[in-house]
Amino acid sequence: MDGVELARHVESIRPDMKVLYTSGYADSEVTRHGLVAPGVEFLQKPYTPSELVVRIRSVLD
Image 1 (cartoon, rainbow, N blue to C red):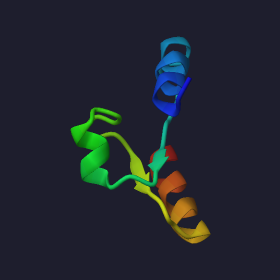
Image 2: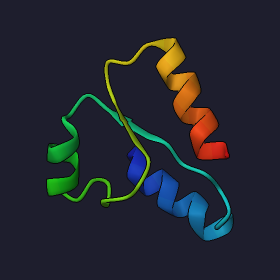
Image 3: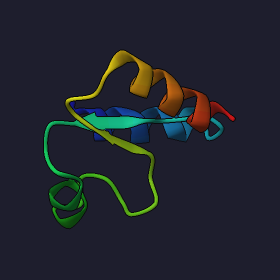
Image 4: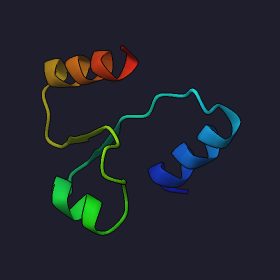
């Protein structure tokens, strides 16, 4: 099971669950191949710890 499948499974149980996807692939590649839908929270690797904290806070707010 990859991260997208896991998120979909958890979402079926907990629809209020917040998800932040991360990947080493470029944002455009991820969207084009349907790994993450447009508008879904996505953070491209590499990222700094502070960037991750800011994005997590944004997703949770």
